[in-house]
Length: 246
Image (cartoon, rainbow, N blue to C red; front, side, top):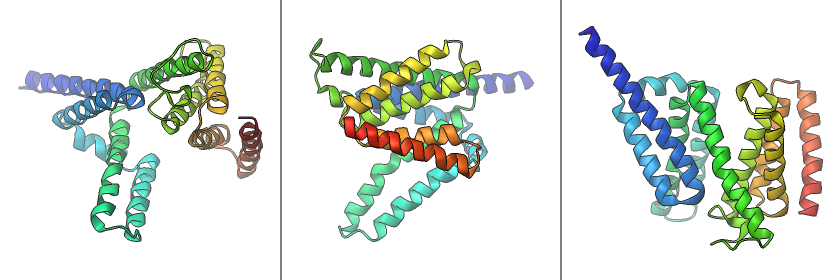
């Protein structure tokens, strides 16, 4: 009986690994192909439910600050729906569009393992890396791609936010060198490449918002309010300069 219990636990953990792998596929697919993203999302959701660990893992992350942020976001969506002027069917349909917020909680629940966290981050950088190289190459006229270099990843908004998020991952890796064996110079170079694309090629202001807020958090985390004010003040001035030259 004990042996059967252990085999069940091992099988359940393997299903969670399938959830994680499908989640990585979905994260990369969201940038390029809705079809690939949908397959990855559905596979991850199904594997998460049938693993038998969904309830336990959800309980473990529900009290985390990021979970509270996600619930607050959902609350604002519902609040916005109440004073809309369109018919109720349209209001609920817009709320339904935000169903991907559930993805946020699944990611938190299954990526508690450090090794899988690194796999997710590195996969994301590699996935966006293909896009940023293609965007620069198309902008330089070296290749002709199916979309404009300013919106190669589905649209300019998606591209700006994706490249900014990838830049933040690279900056975070530089600040936490022990997390990856690659040299910090490589991560720093990648961060500069992503930021340069957001400033000079990608036609999106969403990328600026993600980048400024993310860098502000990274450089003021666990610091005093004075340090946070200085950091955000410097970032605001730098962003104004970037906007003027972009």
